[in-house]
Length: 103
Image 1 (cartoon, helix red, strand yellow):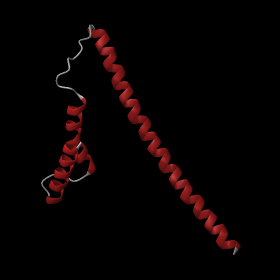
Image 2: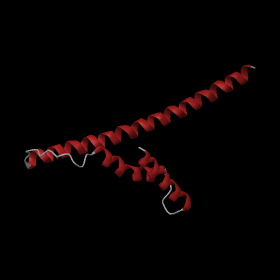
Image 3: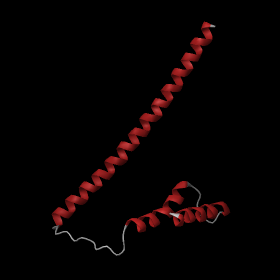
Image 4: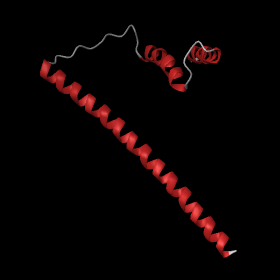
């Protein structure tokens, strides 16, 4: 884990001196290969599945559909959260106006 912290620290320093793009996404892109290498054991044997082309294509299609649905649902959740945040501010403003009028 200290290697990952070191990678992120170095990347943050590169961002400060202008030799790397700024932003958290760039830091995550630098950390992702390290994390992937840690998750995948290079000594492990990769299982071979006996799939024909139709089965393989169907699995790929379902995986892509699941990924696109996850993106859509997260986007809708963000839109809903934003709308609720605006509603809360509006209701707070109405409450403050009512309290101001009462006093």
